[in-house]
Length: 422
Image (cartoon, rainbow, N blue to C red):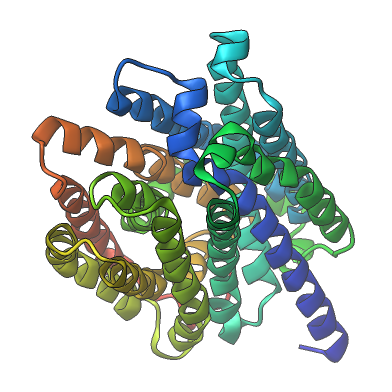
């Protein structure tokens, strides 16, 4: 790249990463406050029913993602990646602050859960366009031989947003009493979304459009692939994402709830162990992304599927038999590393499935559908499986099936690490 282009690339990627961190903090903090939100907005006769309702609202946010992927992804392919990313951060900030300001069920009755579900729908619509748009933005700014490394920061920024949310929740649980967190402290992470939104908006307004997108003509952007080909590509992206999203949301969103309810660990311990897992993911993912630029994507992607499929049952079994601080921290660190094997090459690999004129839409739709079906409802499914089977080990089977499906899909994909963008 010329020096001017390299400088613009660095600025754009940094702005995209930081904006993405703030965006995903907003979306994820709901999951870390789930056990408290259950009592305030979804009261029921028993704890499991209340928690299921809370996680159902969590999943509703993911159900809105495919629609956001279609509409915002189309905006990104027609009007530019930058325009779409500004739309997503405005929507996400609004939905997050809305949760923080909503009165509880005891104050306004059934209107309270309705408003929470509406806020999650807004967040989900935003997130549906965010992932595809920001991934396209990052990898299109990268040199051909650095797409894996640069694209890996998409997942680093998602994990960093989760880490920020997890760390904020853990800090509140550490410095405030349980009663204070339950009474009013839970609102603080959501209300921080207003400040976060302003920072993200400022950063995204001051970056340029990607060179790859600028090179595509209006005629190219107006072309549509055949229906059969579009469905085929979207199906690949869908299958590609199943293992990724199930692992992510079982281990890095649901696990604190699992540790509190089934390992009977303290809330602060559960949240801090989750923070360790996210930190490992953040540190390792760029290294794996860089490695994928050298040896290819497929070996690393399949390694993640196989490794998680093999260890998930023994690790869950060990945790239930030895519910200690050391055990949960070690497990979270291990899963953080194994997810990094997929998250490093993953963003570049899924982007390389599509052509530039349809990349944001194709990625957003395939990825968002898989996340909506398998990831967003993963905490709900895990809670339901345990309640139905009576076995806390049952989520391990869900993770195993997801790993097998995605390993088959990745095996059939061509290696794309060293091909130029189309």
